[in-house]
Image (cartoon, rainbow, N blue to C red):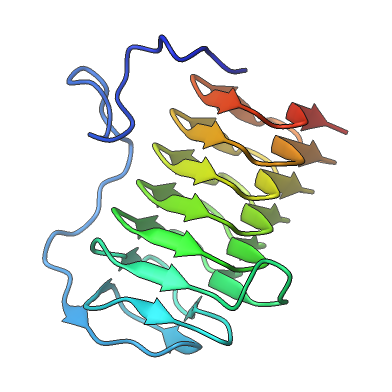
Amino acid sequence: AAKGSSSSFDFTSGGSSNVKSKSTVATNIPTKSLSCGEVIKESVKLSTNLDCTTDGLIVGADGITVDLNGHTLNGPGPKSSNIGIMLATSSGVTVMGPGVVSGFQAGILDTGGQDNKVNGVNFVGNQIAIFMTGAKGTDIEQNMLTGNDIGMASHSSSGTTFTKNLLDKNTLAGVTLVNSADNTIDTNIIEHSNNGVFVD
């Protein structure tokens, strides 16, 4: 499930030259100034950092892209009940970096979505970096998940592909799979957690 630090791919540059991401996203996404708690219904690039005391961004449409565009989405703290980016039953959504999501109960919450992608994002200091419940076919690739309680948690979800991610110092676990089937965890680095990969 995990390989040591001698891995041949480079997380910071998006992988070695012979590794290609499955994500294909539009390159002509408009840059916009967004507010905390805003519902997003079209593809968008962040134009600035967001410091939130509430939820961060709420995806309200299928098939769109949220590009952090090198910016940081800060929350009120991991013990809050707030979500960084919420994918509430949205499908075909791409959340992409570079960028940082920090200080939320869940950096990303995907509840019941299908075929969503998370690529190139740095999740730091959240209770759960990426949390999926009832999701199908989520592709999570080339992210950094560091200093969270749990890196990636999957509850009652299926068809997740979790590959080429770097997980370090996620206190409780790097990855937890609960009541989840047909998932692939491949070519990740998972270090310094009480549990590397926990399956129940």
